[in-house]
Image (cartoon, rainbow, N blue to C red; front, side, top):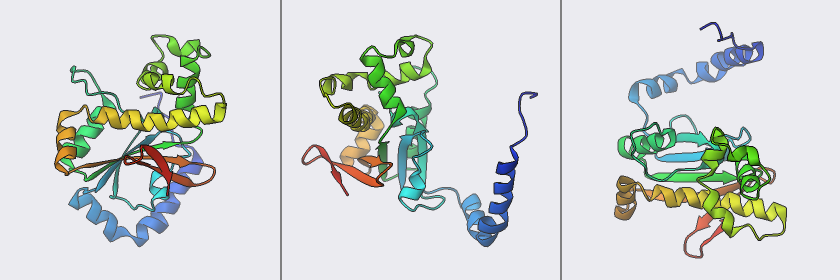
Length: 216
C-alpha cells in the first residue's frame, strides 16, 4: 500500500486531544456502545457536503442516528440487479436489520450536486452528460424533476426548489422498496423530508397535508 500516507499532523493532534478529553471523560459510555451494539431510532440520508452537520443540527450523540451520506442526498429506485448499490444497501440495513422507526431525507441550501443537475439538464454542463461521469449519472436520479423548475426565472429560487424536489424524489424512490413500503403502510416506519438553510440555520419539514415544506 505504498500510496497510503501518514495522517497530516493537525489530524493527529486533534485525535490525541479528543482521546485525552472527550473519550477519557466518557470511557464507560464508549465501551457500552462498543459491546452493546447500535440501536438507532432513526436513519438520516444527507448530502456529502461538509457544511451539513447532521448530528450538530439535532444535538445527537453517538448511537442515535444511522447516517448515510451521498451526493445531493439522493436515493435511487429499487433495482435488485445483482450490482453494487451503496445507498440501497444502507437503507436495507437500517430498515431490515436495525429496524429504525424513522427515516429522514435531509436536503440543504447551496447544494453543488443539485446545481450540477440543473446545469446538466439546461445544457450548461456537457461534461456531466459523459457516460464516465459518476456525478452526472448519479444526478440522473433527479433529472425528471427538472421539468418542474425549468421555467422558474429567478436562479436562486430555481435551485432552491430543485433541492427540495431532490428530497421528495428520494422519498418517492424509497417507497419503491417493497419491504420498506410495507413498514410504512403498517406504521412501523415513518418517512420525513427536510431541507436546511446553511447560512440561516433554518430547518423546513415537508408537510404532506398541504404538500409543501414548512419552517420549524
